[in-house]
Image (cartoon, rainbow, N blue to C red; front, top):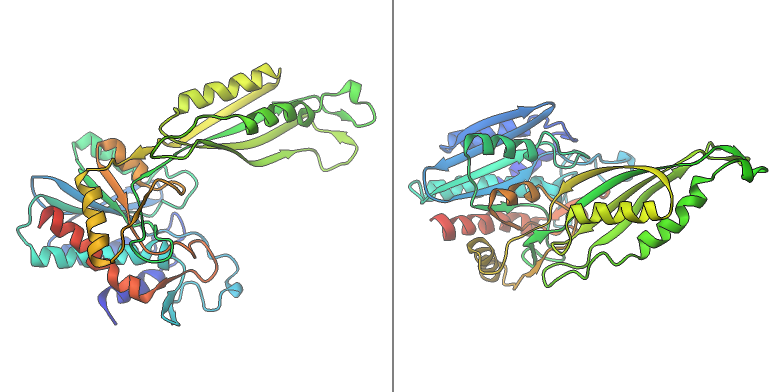
Length: 377
C-alpha cells in the first residue's frame, strides 16, 4: 500500500465530523515534525487547527485543507461502512475520501518528499489544516487562524487549496477564484388572525409575495469576464402555526447572494432593503457575510505554475474557473495571497458512497510536489 493511500485510509477511519478532528491533526503534526517541520497547534473554542512550516525567509507557499467531514447520513445506505475505507473497482470509498482527506494525505506526502529532496529550498513551505470547514459558521477555523496570523505578522504569498475541483479527471479544472457569499435572515411581521376574518389580520405571506417577485426578478449585475452574474436565492421560507384556519403573524425567509466582483456586499444589502421598504413591509433583516469574492488574476506565479503542472503531469489544459461554492481560500486571499484550488473529482462529495479514484489519489502528491519544486525548489 502506498504512503498516500495508507494515510488517507487512516484519516477516513477517524470519525471527524465537524468540528471534531478525532486525532487527525496530531497524527499529521507528528509526521511533519519528524520531517523537520515546525508545528503549531492552534485551538479556538472546539476547533483544532494546525500550522506547519519548513524553511525561513523569502516567499511562503502554503497548502490549505480540512480534516473535518460532513455527516455520513444513514450508514445503511452505504455499500460499505462510511468510516471504514474500502477499495472497490479501482476506487477508495469512505466519508472524506474526496472531500478532502485524500488531498490532505497527498499534501502531507508531497511536503515530506519535497523537503527530503530539497532540505535547503528557497523560502518557506507550509501546511494549514482545520477541523472547521464544513460547519455553518467557520468561526474558529481558518478565519480565526488568519486573525492570529495578522496579529503576529505571519505572511502567505501563495496558497494551494486541496478542495475537490475536477469534473471528470484530475487536472481538468482548477479554481482561480470564488464568488462571495452573503446570507440574510428576513422576518416579515404581520397580524395573526382567523382566516375567515382577513380584514382583522395582516398576512405576512401575502405582503411579502410582491417583494419576493421583485427580488427574484432583479438583475443585480451583469457579471464580468471572470465571474457569472450575481445570483439571489431563497433557501427557506417558513410561516404559520400548523393550523389551516389561522393567518400567521410572522414569516421568516433565509436568503443568499452568491456575488461576483461586479457587486459589493454593501450595495446588495442596501438594494435588498430598499425593495422591502418600497413594498411597505414591517421587517427585520439580519445579514451574515461569509466571504468576499476573490480572484487570482492571469499572470500570477501560482496560477501559471498550477496550469503548467496540469499540462505536464495530467496532460490536460485545465479550465480556469471561479464557479462553485465557497472555500477557506476566501480567508487567505485578503492576506494578499494568490489562491488556486486543485484536487480530485468532486462528483461524489457529500454523497452516499463518496469515493476517489485510486489512480488520481496516487497522482496527487506528485502534482503538489511539482508546484513546490517550481516555486521553491
